Image (cartoon, rainbow, N blue to C red):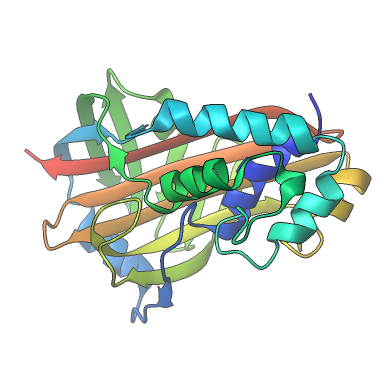
Length: 251
């Protein structure tokens, strides 16, 4: 696998968002108290929001673009480093798409909307200011999460995520399809990896890891938005990647 095929999901991870929307810092007196109030103990119905309109066509056009520029990923990373989502803001023939295909792909990414691909049972358990999750019939990764509210960290398997952002999305025209507020915890290795140095890091670093947990509330539905995502690279090649966004409705 060429390293450029890794660039887009990693860029999306570093950009937080995955499509064009505005994030604003949201001031919580205590972000972890906000989480404790938001995540009520008990059972929820979880919608797995991994579907989207035009998902197959988007993948087809991305594959065509990457197959054309696969030997020039330094140029691509530099070309998109000012964008909000790791995808080009403007057309260039080097992308290997026609102008019409580029506009089609850009529209699919900019107007990406999550849709449910199924439901499952989700449980929130609390003890001594620690929160654990249990699922029946859903992705198993949530069971590896423990939120330590006193230490303001999230433990995911062997990784420890630090509180990284408190955010508010005030425009409902986004991939989630709703205004929302929330908190993000992140683990990034090596420290300091960013859009500006991504191409260099892909060349120089043997291991790259990015994990992020987002916990928030949809407005005005009051559903809980929970998303866990991660990507690992080894010697510039993708070792593993996952994204599990869910909407929770209290039973």
